[in-house]
Length: 453
Image (cartoon, rainbow, N blue to C red; front, side, top):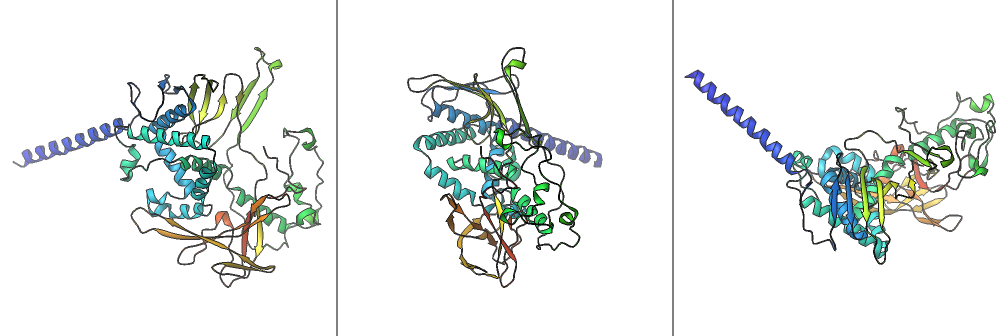
């Protein structure tokens, strides 16, 4: 009797396990994109054709630019929606809404930039043609998501439903790339200030030590400048004397240097002239060397648009960024292009001594600085929402008359913690004599000039 019960129990367990495996298989297959057949979509004005090669790379053919954007969004959503969702949430500081408290620290750091509000401002100031393109792409993304037999499997694991795509989300995915490639500039600038504070010797322009030019040269003879007059001759920067480099007795400004990290990935690009090739055609080699991810950052696709009465035809082949209706790098059949991360001088971190900070004002030796306050609500899955107050300085005009936002970020939770300052910047504490940090566009200094391209 006991043996029979054990056999039946084992059989039931095996059947339940088999049913679970079948259910997982069904859900996974249902979340895969459709590769064959026809789909009727009300958001299109003409027929669109999507074909895939043996590697699954799609060729999208449409009769006009809006239909091409719609179809690109449709294909992106079916293949990469979860990746797109993470990108927009990373930039907007909305990961906690998906993952819960574990992502709250990351969201609080990112919310300092208020990228969601900025993306909405970008959309409001876009031309009607630009808005129509992003809205068509967003409709295509949502149609592609709805056309799946089941939501992407990641949402099953999280017990969540995907949130529809919006036009401003396409701007957010570009800000996510900035966070990945450029945001560490804050840390580099803080480190540069600390190095300058520890160096000895004379000061050059802008209060920077002359010895800093040796440690932070504007370029080397290995660089390929975009203009001959920006070339740096080998040995043109003098080696500082021992006194300037003696940091044993140096006094720190109070901010600890960031810990050393593993070497970062590096990108590279080069061009070979046609006179050096067998075919006479120029060659472009472009390695946008990002960290290895699954799935990868880029999405290979071919985008084709037939010529019409008011628009020329297009035949683009290269990589797209899931979340955006455009080709990032590739070829149009006549011109090939590519790029890598820029090392221009795009931001600066300037110390602002302060003795006190109130709700609306920062006290500095030069007088009070008015602070604007924006309250951000961070929704947290499985917990109460988190409130974040972001204080920033005023808009002023730079030497060229262009508006620059002198930002002094002080983010505090209800408990008053300032541990979420961006990239190591220290806030002026209530009643304390710490330092604030404000970020602005820096005018080029003699030691370091950035080219805008």
